Structures are given as C-alpha cells and as structure tokens.
Image (cartoon, rainbow over all chains, first blue to last red; front, side, top):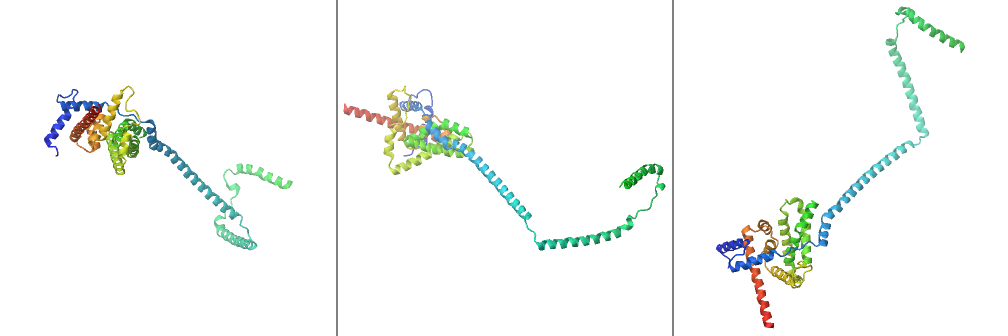
Length: 172
Length: 177
C-alpha cells in the first residue's frame, strides 16, 4: 500500500527532527538518530595512489603526451613542404640547364646567318631612310665665332687647344 | 583544465569509490566504474560549469554501477561478489579502532549494500558522505522533499535489517548455549 500524503508529511517532519543535535525523545526516532550519527562516522576511503595515477595517465597525462605529437606532425609537414619546394627548384634548374646544352646544327647556323644578314640589310635601309628624313631638321646654321658675345675671350681659350692639336699631328 | 580535473579527482574520487563499492560490492569493479566516469568527465569537463561536477559524477557513477550490477545479476555472479564484499581489500578503519568497530562497519556496509535503490544511494550520499540535499536531488533526479522522505525510509529499513540480524545472532548464540 502506498503511503498517504499525510504519512509523507510525518516522515518529512521526522527527517527534519533527526537533523537536530540532540536525539528526539520518541524511541523509534531516537534509534534512527543514533544510526544516522553512526553512519556519519563511517570514514570515506582515501584514493588508492595506484588507481589515481592510472586515472590521470588515461586522461591528463595522455593529453600531455599528445601535445608533442602535434608538434612532431607540424615539423613533419614543414619538412615535407621544404622537400617539395627543393624538389621543384631542382627540377627547374635541370630544365634551364637543359636549354643551355641544346646543340646548334649546321642548318640552324645557316638560318641564323641568313636572318642576321636580312636584319643587317633592313637596318642599313632604315638608317638611310632615317638619315634622309632627319637631315633637314638637323641642318645646323653656320655660326662664326666672331658673331658670338665675348668672342675675344673664347678665342683666347680655343687657340691653345688648336695649337696643341696641331703639335700632336706634327709629332705623329 | 588539467588542474581542475586533478582537483576534482582528489576531492570526489574517494566518495565516488565508496558509492561504487557499496553498490557493486567489489573494489575492483568499483575502481573500473569510477575510472570510466572520470574519463568521461575529462571529455565533458569543458562543458560543465563550476559546481555541477559532483552531481554529474554521482549520476554517472551510480548509473554505471547499476548497469554493471544488472549485467552481473544476469550472469549470476552476485553471490561471488557478496563473499568478496565481506573481505575488504583495504582496512576500512584506522588501526586505533577496535575490532568491534570494524565488525560493526562491515555489518553496516553489508546491510547498506543489500538495500534497494534509491535508498542505498541516499544513505551513502546523505548520511555517510553528508552531501547537500540539493546536490543529491540533482544527481538522483529527485525533488528535495523526495530525498528527505526516501532517506528517512531507507534509514528506517536499514535499522530494521540490522535489528533483525542482531536478533538472529542472539537466537543463534542461545541455541548454541
């Protein structure tokens, strides 16, 4: 039979009375109070050290051991990346070296000479045309030294130069 | 987080082992059950607020123990475990306690272990370990008044069982005499 709400209230009140420092006067509650005191004096066991170490090894220490593995993984990835870069560089260098080692055949040389001659002809023709076109704008007016300002001073500076140049021609 | 976890292990490990041992009646089984819960706690710790850990641990340990108990009962190993319970693997009391006190403690442990749930857990958590009513209520999914009333009933049932044992022993002594 289930206890009625009134029974529950009685039990609740009895439980509250067992929390007092002095034992209740009712004999049943008195015995309950003593049992409660006795249970409260049962010691809680200490942690076995080996068990504690096992728990920590499975949790926090495992976590600590995992950290260096992360670092090792990063280091391995870095080394791999460096290796790939080095390998690509090596591959590029060998390709460049290969271009240098291409042998030129006699036909290639003839084609090259023909191309250079064509360039030479066209360069000469271009130069001639350019000279003809540009000669008119660049034709300088004839200016005499005496027409310039400070002509005597200039003549005094230029004459020693002229004489030195004529001396050299005489010596040679 | 590691410091918080170690503090929780040191603070509550003993009471969890006691709870598990009194439910499972085996030190080795109790250590395994609590260890499993602490490993789970390590995974959940970041999501638990301060002050919630004990209730979480008690719930986890009690559920793990009851699961193991059900498995044991299915396998019919309960009788063997009872025999182991009577021989504790470590001294329950300090050396200055008398033999009578140790025997009384063993008697109390055996009688508590034989109680049905949730009375057994309530006696351990409230009367032996003096846990707060609100924490016990949270851990066992009960109201505060339910905790008090069920605790009262469990203690009364324990006292009746102990008195019955005593009467049985006295009758046995008289018959021998």
